[in-house]
Image 1 (cartoon, one colour):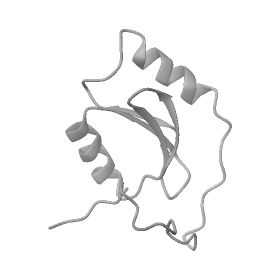
Image 2 (cartoon, rainbow, N blue to C red):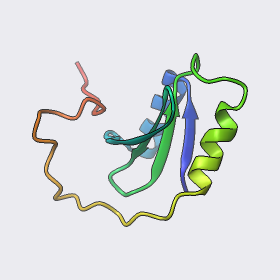
Image 3 (cartoon, rainbow, N blue to C red):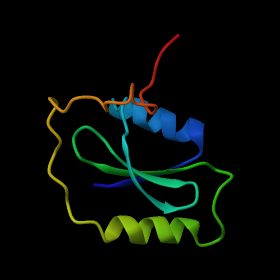
Length: 92
C-alpha cells in the first residue's frame, strides 16, 4: 500500500515506526512532493507541510493510485555511485 506523508517531523515519525531508513527518490508529483521507494518497493510521496496548493493532496493521491505495483528491490542493490544516499538517516 502506498503512503502519502506531509510535514517533515510527521513523515519521519511514520517512517521510523515502519523501520524505513532509506528512501531513494524516483520522481516528483509536483514541486516539493517527491515520489520515493522503500527498500521493499513501497511507494511513498513526501511533501513538506509548507508546499503545495489546494489540490496538492488530490494530485498526490491520484498519482499514487495510477502507479503499477513495483517488484521489491533486492537488498543487494549497491548504493548510488556518487556517494551516500542523501535520504538515509544518520544518527549523530
